View 1 (cartoon, rainbow, N blue to C red):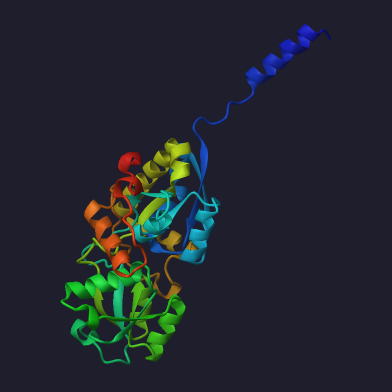
View 2 (view 1 turned 90 degrees about the vertical axis):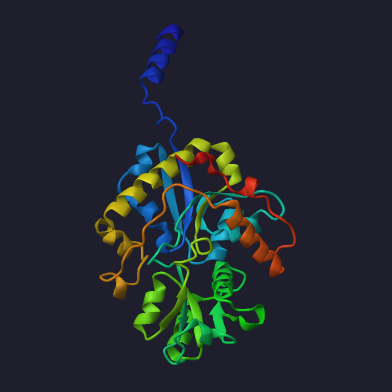
Length: 312
């Protein structure tokens, strides 16, 4: 066989080979077992990521520190977190950008709840003055606690918090009465109520505090903005499907352990927000809180840290 014929065959083989899927990139998303991630799983189940030209790989994580470790090491590209976490990533250089609200409290659907132990006898916000409230310190849980109580007229010296970072510990201490009050996210707050706890306050009237965001590493956004746009377009469609009929996705709640088994039948899925990003006022309030606590000493740029340009 002559060299010319071999060359011709090679050209024909290359021409006949299937072309790679145009624009298909893989995004690795670190996911905690929290209700905030529900639209992501629906997008996966409904084939919406594929429809919008992006592959998505979920990396389950057990805690926020584990999530942040993966992101810092470049082993995950994006996640659901809060503006506080984005600020801490960006304290030296801009590493993370919030690109969309994930979950936002709504009327009748709180995201974080201040609960009193059934053993405490506490039933009103006023009775929390000077009472130690179990929180995960330096996180959105402590931030929401401070802001909700301040909205009720509490002064700084009337707000007392105690560090109980692990949610299972907080739950068991509330159930036993060793902790008089604590803060829990939805839907675990419902489990505490089922065990005798009392809801004293929640953030449904203050959506500007208790929301979460979808964030990506800036390096990933800069390298492949089309993939992130495809991801967000899929989330938008999944959110519309979920809000139209959440009962269709009860299977996801159980399969992904987003809702404790005892609550599956009674749990009411909250409405999820449509495309949008945190406002500059929301950003600055959280930033001021971190500075008040001495966790940050510098300003972190809103314009560099919140990126609305990728939304559909």
